[in-house]
Amino acid sequence: MRLRPSWVSGLNSEFFVETKKRVEVIDITAEVEKRAGSGNACLVFVPHATAALILNEFEPNIQEDYGEFFSRIAKGEWKHDRIDNNAEAHLLSALISPSVLVPVENKRLQLGTWQRIMLVELDGPRKRKVLVRMI
Image (cartoon, rainbow, N blue to C red; front, side, top):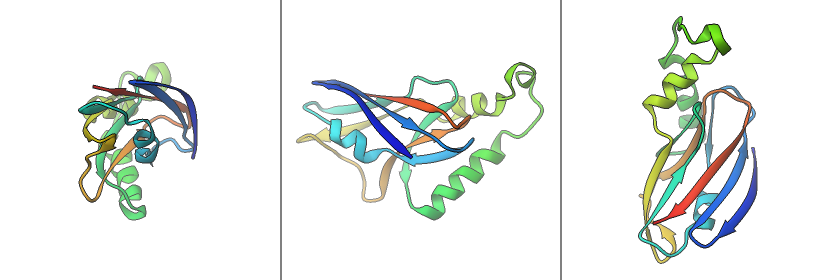
């Protein structure tokens, strides 16, 4: 995993995540927290049709479980696969979400003890943009 910052400016910032697998779950919490500024909440958004974000526990075993779960859940023969063979990725991203909203206090994300913000790659490897907006 390589994280590459793009720009940071007050309430708006973005960074890129380069994924290595077709289905992969990557903890991006530290990168988001670096960008948390003044505001009451932090909106994190991925502008992609085959990627998503989740807010949950992150450790090596559950990371593998997420990947396995997402690889299994939308298995099937889909009409969209006739176009570019990634219908599962589109269906899964529609079920998950392209964004998470996290409360912020004193420029710190107010996450629970085990909560982390994770990028879910569903059609990799790719270079994914992550937008961070303070509200």
